[in-house]
Length: 262
Image 1: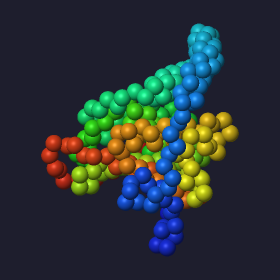
Image 2 (image 1 turned 30 degrees about the horizontal axis):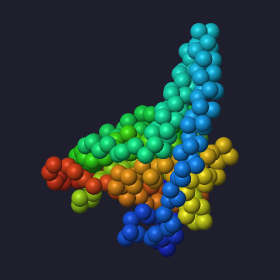
Image 3 (image 1 turned 180 degrees about the vertical axis):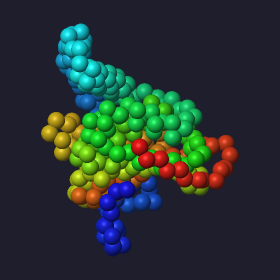
Image 4 (image 1 turned 90 degrees about the vertical axis):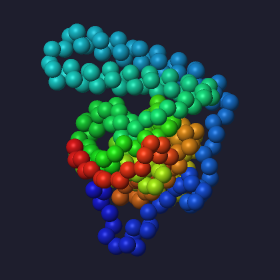
């Protein structure tokens, strides 16, 4: 579990962001302008050139390396490279104003697919995963690939915020009335109240090599799929993302929590 302040008063100090009109409101995400749409193809071209060199170099190394452990690291590089290429494709599609293509999907299955995609990062930092899923499927309607990309960005940010060997990622899914609630919680460095107000704005980042577009595109994708977003964070404690989806399950079922520790 995430380390929590013991007294109730301290708990209420968690900083909050909510996209819901019923919650505390912060300035809405800034919409990316036409200049960025024109810049995106040029950026994709510049990224893909070195990416092709990386893939070629790894292919050559695989033919030379015999050690199985070293080969496993080369496989990680190739999977990461493929992920970067997919993100470039998603970025170009996103800024071409593609129409959301809704489909019915399971929140639990979607999360498991995201965890599989981020397994290398989790393994390299020895991060412990705690999954708390309701025993019944939470079904939602939305553009599955766009939602997966958004959730992946949130989990990658959580991984980056945690220290190796001490990280703990808690993921839960529960049904509350007519909603499916997904929570992604880490015990990382947390976000200051000042920065929390800006995390969804384009080009805002504290990462030296970051562009500040990850959470901006994440928020746009989630809002396009009518997902409500809330964030709680405290410096030195961690961060929790709360995503609320409309539950489209065919019948109402009793929510029975299931705890899985990986």
